[in-house]
Image 1 (cartoon, rainbow, N blue to C red):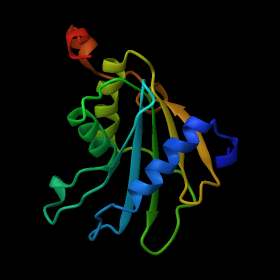
Image 2 (tube, rainbow, N blue to C red; image 1 turned 180 degrees about the vertical axis):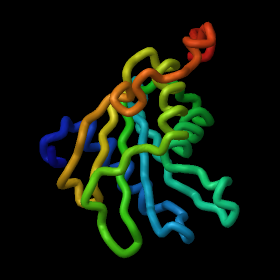
Image 3 (cartoon, rainbow, N blue to C red; image 1 turned 135 degrees about the vertical axis):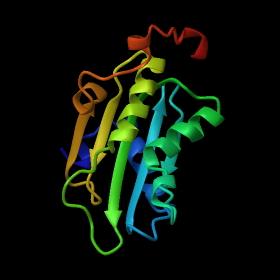
Image 4 (cartoon, rainbow, N blue to C red; image 1 turned 180 degrees about the horizontal axis):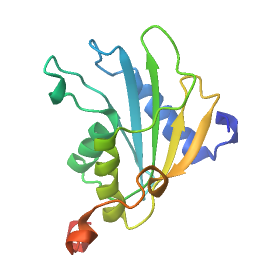
Length: 154
């Protein structure tokens, strides 16, 4: 799939992720990632990776978006988008979330009570895949496995 084949709401979401990618702080990996979440009410919340000299303290774009959203009062989503580029070249394959981000998105899915749609794109948006969180993290572990009722957190 290419950009023109996306629904308008997914185009807007991917464009927000692209803008966020331009704000990434990636002096170590030189890999700039932007993400955006689509709230169930239509609001789009972006995030970008922010690296640290102590690599373990780096935050990925997806988690940045989730934490930004939480602080803005949003916890219910229907979709997310991810786009990336290297400082010196565009990506030729889509970029998916790392394992930690997949786990955080799993939490978001359970909070949202729906299987999130992911829009994963190359830098030039010439190769786009639509996936679900179940595709990215099958047999996931989340709050339901612990018997946690998330209704009061929605």
